[in-house]
Amino acid sequence: MHIDGKRRGNTLADTLHIPAHVRLWVEEIAALCEPDRIYWCDGTQTEWDRIATEQVARGSMVALNPEHYPNSYLARSAPNDVARTEGRTFICAASKEEVGPTNNWIAPQEGRARMQAIFKGCMRGRTLYVVPFCMGPIEAENRVIGVQVTDSAYAVLSMRIMTRIGRDVLKTLGENEFFARCIHSVGAPRSKGEPDTAWPCNDEKWILHFPESREIWSYGSGYGGNALLGKKCLALRIASVMARDQGWLAEHMLILKVTSPENKIHYIAGAFPSACGKTNLAMLDSTLPGWKVETLGDDICWIRVGADGYFYACNPETGFFGVAPGTSNKTNRNAMQTMRSNSIFTNAALTEDGRVWWKGMTDTPPQGLTDWRGRPWDPDSGPAMHPNARFTAPIEQCPSLAEEWCRPEGVRLSAILVGGRRASAVPLVTEAFSWEHGVYMGATLASESTAASEHDLGSLRRDPFAMNPFCGYNMGDYFAHWLSFAQNEQVDKAHMPRFFMVNWFRTDENGQFIWPGFGDNIRVLKWIVERLEGAAEAVHTPVGNVPAKGSLDLDGLGMQEDDLVPLMTIDRAVWRKEAEANRNYLAGLGARVPEQLRDEQDALEKRLRA
Ligand code: SAT
Ligand code: MN
Image (cartoon, rainbow, N blue to C red; front, top):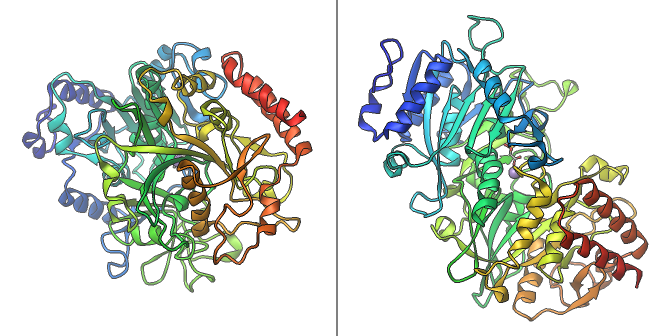
């Protein structure tokens, strides 16, 4: 393909099927960003190897020891580019009211004008990579195709792990067929003509979403959630709007498969705010003989109602972008195995023999670490890795992967979990009374940060369905959308997934966790499955059904029935406060919170008074 004399595309582009409307759009973006070169990605291993080698040569990545981590790399970010920047993330819908109180808003026209100005010439001296990608299996009817242009090689390499990219995606995209336009730049160097640092980024960051045109403009950051635009930006923020309009759900949920000793299979999705062990639960290593958990996804779940009226879940990604610190062979063996090759590590510490390290991986740090800033580690100068150090690893390498993980039609959902980190009040597991009650549980979901749970309980962070940073429209409308499925004619009401609230984090008077968690969470999943099958007993409480005495399998756990009492008791005084806090929270979300949720609120308060 030919752009102009100076900015020729790679010759590879000649061998790709590039629909004219994609080519034109890329030309338009290139004219704005003025890169030195345009490169169309075909998504092959050869391409990945070459780009990675280039990045190592220019000091942007470190090749890890191939004996321990074949074909894997460590990247170190700029110290001011280590996480998502929610304060700089905007939804450019027609009105502020439409995005609601949980989103930042800029009017679309103003947003566009700003992006045109700030992207002008921002890629000078760099390569513009074109990454055609697909969220969901390519052959799935409801996959979403996007094209990301980016000047970040790290983003290109990461996108190849996290999504389906390249030749096959372009081949399936028809002439004039819709694709999500995703424009990303790490931002111009601060002073003109300045050479790029190992991790270029800009102090000024803008993450803009245009839900109407399904378009994303991201400037100034190379970090995962800001730069891999298929993930949070498209598969959650934009997709949540598409889902609202088209009658499906784009959720921040894991998907797992539970198999019982009798070979009964259930698929379960789960919404958990960050730092609640979502990835660990998705890869749970069962401690109950005969009970098996397999993984389908750890972050994003698209849910659709099938022609048969059941709910079908699908993970639109192909990789994990997981938090590294705390991950070890003790806490998550499957994750450790998954990232043993073909992976990218970001802001981890480096050992003398070319391996990565983070807190929790081993009891004591190895000698001679290089810290995440690339300096010999001095324990007095802070942790060796960044607390948000990440691993990016292909899902296919996960030992606990369920073979049907990428089935185009998805898997039939039996249950939906919602859970946060709660030192008090919330029982180990609570079954909702109804779909509406379950939506209420999701809508009022809250979590304490680790630090907060040690000190005061006041700093409870609200995170409805763990979607607070990811719902691309008004939260009240989002709750209404969830509720609408109970009235949806397409839905088989007898087979809707059942809601359960879980909490692995309740502590005793000494601040110690009461429940062992991790692999023993299978005991809770077992109870849930047995509830679904009408086998396990439950006790009715004002907040939902909790396990009856003897119904939770404690075999081999070393805990007695009495030890469970503090995990299951509902303290009415505490819960009246909890309910009041819920009421205030919902009120703060404004007038679009549906009446039906207020009814659930009233009903809860009434049950607590009775
Ligand atoms: O920080 S990211 O959005 O990239 C990942 C996450 O929060 O799950
Ligand atoms: Mn997430």
